[in-house]
Image 1 (cartoon, rainbow over the protein chains, first blue to last red):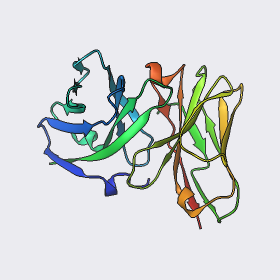
Image 2 (image 1 turned 180 degrees about the vertical axis):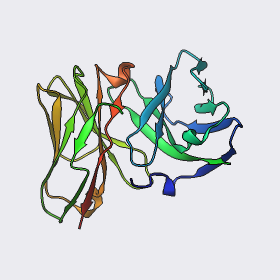
Image 3 (image 1 turned 30 degrees about the horizontal axis):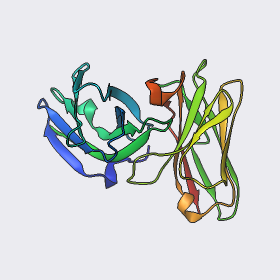
Length: 111
Length: 115
């Protein structure tokens, strides 16, 4: 499959460590946020979402934090595994019908 | 796998031609959204169809059009192709509206190259 990750900023993390991927959003009217994972040759895959009335939401090995004051979103992945290697996108909804994707971050796992 | 399929996988066209890309959604999913992903960029929303009617459009010109059919298949049509239309085109299906919290399931995409 094609290599999705070649042109994105890269975060390199040691296998077993925790990863933190950050995202700044620009629209203060955004009320719904989603993190997606995109592996090479595949479409984006939903990881976790959060609404603007929450600050934190946890899933299996993942946590999303939302700081509305500074318009910042982060995705924390615990005990990073080789299978976590991918490009990660934050996405937001302004309150209409569109999901707007942000810039991606490539997560590279070091052995 | 997501249960969403797209065809063809790859396509090469020349400037000025027309192209039709196809998507098969998960059965029961009433919403299909189409995205354009240029190399090194995040997916950009083109438009969304809900129960066969357009229900939201991004900043794309009218030469990008779509159709959604009752059998959960859909099409993206692009007329008068331009070089900048070269990209990965993704479709995503959801039960209802993704913006209201319904998970989107993406297909693997169609890579369009315009020469």
